[in-house]
Amino acid sequence: MSRRAPALEPASESSGLGRPGEAAGALRAHRSLHTSYSRQDTYHQRVPILSLSFDDDSEEPLFVFSGEDLLMAHIDEVDLEWEEVAERSILDERRGLVITQVAVLEKLIDEFILYVTDPADPEGCQRRLDRKTIGPRIDELEKVLRERDLLDAAGAELIADLRALVDIRNELAHGIIYRTLLYVVPIEELATRDLPQEWRIYSRRSRTSRRLTTAGLRENLEDAIGCFTALIAWGEDLVKQAPSPQNFREPTYFTSPREQ
Image 1 (cartoon, rainbow, N blue to C red):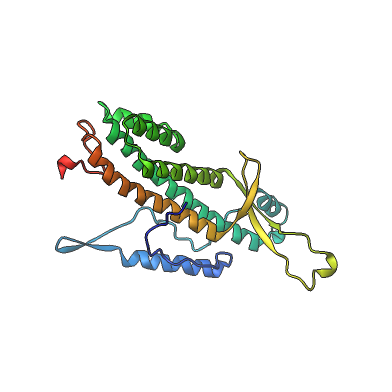
Image 2 (cartoon, rainbow, N blue to C red):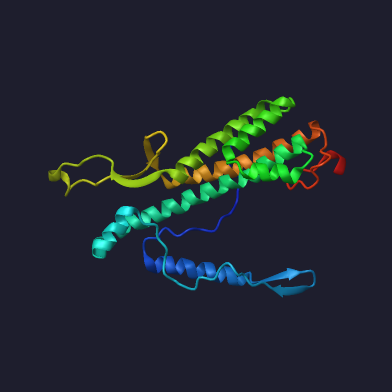
């Protein structure tokens, strides 16, 4: 996939998630940032905003543990490999971002379907779509576009990009990650050579594994954002060709030409 996300400026991330002191410092910085935005301008006065979701006062860092980690901790916590735990937590945080970003595409896909089909009962159609996973939603979107001769080459490429993202999302959501040596180093060379390690993700579906990297997960995230913005741009042209809906009256992303 060649699309990339627009130049966004995310908050910088700490590379020391494996060090409890640094993790706690990052958490305090986040709280400070959140507090600085606790009052927002509303018309001509500042209104206090109270967030009910950020209610964890603990400064203990959070980690993701494998089953083996938890078994080891149950037997003897001293032997727990904290460096590996920290690395897994960093990778799991990033794969969680990718999974969540791909899920954002569902509402946009639904809106395409509702806009093009203009069902007599939009709410009922939305409830039906809500019972589907993202894969069948994409299949339905492709079907309704083809039936109405609205799927051009650019749209077909976007459908292919969506399916590729869903494959990545499913692998990240259901795969097993583990750390392993890249190759075995002879015992006599252990003192003079580095031990190259890698993280891999094992797919239950294909029964294969591949290397998992932070750069690769960043690329996956940017692809998901880029695909969303590309779909928005393509949709702006689509609404000029498709009949204006009569029943679907509350689009979020598209405006019918007759309403402009």
